Image (cartoon, rainbow over all chains, first blue to last red; front, side, top):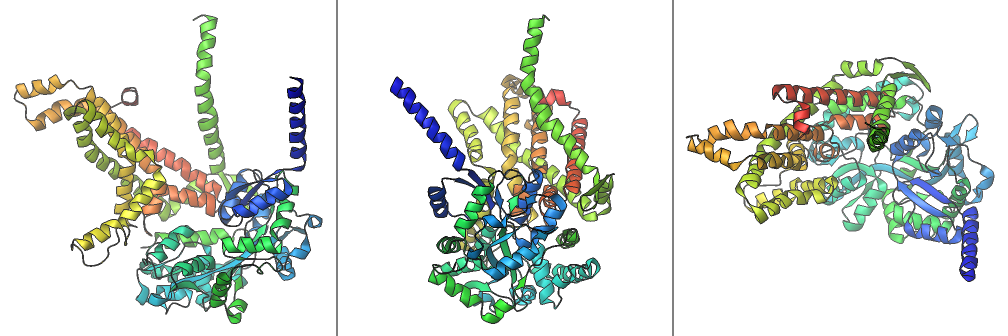
Length: 353
Length: 286
């Protein structure tokens, strides 16, 4: 009995010491950004446990807004959606750069992200994964589709798909020779652009098979051949390319739209230390390569592409030559209130017959 | 009542009251407060009915609202027409084991989630799906046909999702109808049609009404089926609420929509009860 008591005491003591140094990291992220094997390595090394919730930009903000920034310790929204969300809802807290191993980040990306996620003099975001949206095309059947507006062409009627969301508006605007990002700060000029795009998208509506919602949905449509050209993410195109060599991602003539997903700390996160541990861990070159291999997108880690599979690199180079990379339109921060204008436009497109 | 039994009564009442107050009444009060606050700037709100005004001034919103209501009513009627014969067969024409088996077969699809059932329909109806391929194989159609992404597909999905909730109350009420009443009807020279009209349907009315209420509510409030099976023109009101809350960050308008949906469903159920001359206590109390 005495032995039992002693061993229980030891066990309790052991449990309490681990709980002092180890935290539970509640991570709000995108599918593929926290692969099982990376989590296992991280847990073994630090003793923290990781709970992953996968989501998208809008849902991340909505979830954090509902709890005033609680319930998660680290989130990964895109860099253009941070400053306005902070301004409107106050759901994040500023980063403590002394906790971050800055040498692991590609300097230009880190600076650009810092500039775009600064609100009232404080920096809120660190870059993690970047990628683009553009066109995924079945080149055997719709090789003529090289720009967003080609989706409205007679020759692909009934077998194209895109999302009814803001990237579609922006992509079409660029393909129509407009410059929506330059008009971000001028609501009237932006409304003018939206009106032109609205007319084009309403005219294009009969061409569309369905507006897709989820990544799996559009992949299924393309894989089955029901859709031959779509507006989608680069990774989706490269994944399909692995199964069917005809389908691949095409950087549109008007320019692919570039996004960077970041690390931000929710305002009421409880495990900041574990969050910084995770950031520093996943930005190591070998871990960054593992994430690129599952997520399909490259990271902002220095040498992060060293151990990326040769097939993925080949697909990336096939879609992007140097000119296409230079032509990527990177999302600037969305000013608060702009989404209301876009929302009204999207509603009218949706309602039109 | 003694003090003791009073205490027991209140203790038993507690879980129900807790559930009602914390999960239904309080959230609705919160939602209502949000719905009457208008956004005028960044982190600036003022009280007013502007969000409700937006609904009535924007044709898209009230058209979708009306569309959702009509399609839900149509779904309810269709479910009744399809469910009644099935329920009648199970309740009156089968006995013992067969009855249990048939009842179970109606139940089996509901062992998996609604999402899986809806994906099942997507596999059947899509252009490269089972139905299209079968019709091409039998030579009925020349090339692939898209059955998905239209209002018909939504209707099929909704009826399939809710038919069980029509069959169960119908079987229960039809079961309670004494067979000798039907026999007596035939003995007195009644035809099949007049017996159905004079004996079976009047007896089954409470079941029909409660089944219709449940099916109507399920269809009106359904999100998944219309979104997945519907096409580019197939708007559903719950989809609009989701968009306002999640992609537009406009909780104020979303809450107002939520309240309007609540008002709509309550009104239609009230009208339905008045038309069928039933009371809510009578239909739900059985």
